[in-house]
Image 1 (cartoon, rainbow, N blue to C red):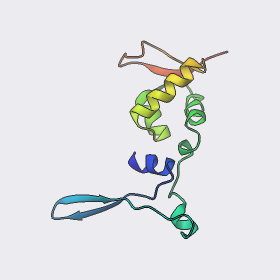
Image 2: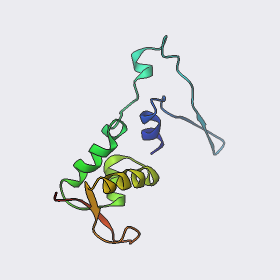
Image 3: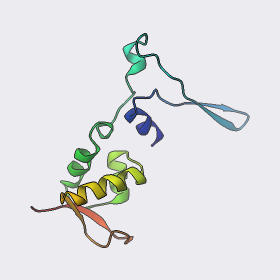
Length: 112
């Protein structure tokens, strides 16, 4: 999940280092003027990093999906996905199959 968020922000990949049972994370800034294209290009950028709304709608084209299924399909965090689902619901592009807070809620495209 962190890698997808970093890629969406056009940040370099996270470098994890293990030492004595502890992990440390290193983020470094890239000077885009002097960096090579391999350094500036996010590794394995998912389509969701560019167009999360379209990715969600596309995932729902095959039928209703639970929030966890949409998280897996899009790579978005629960918080970010919730924001996008609310946006799509307000635009009447999708609707929940049950109450939003129900553990059994699935999302589907509207038939408009």
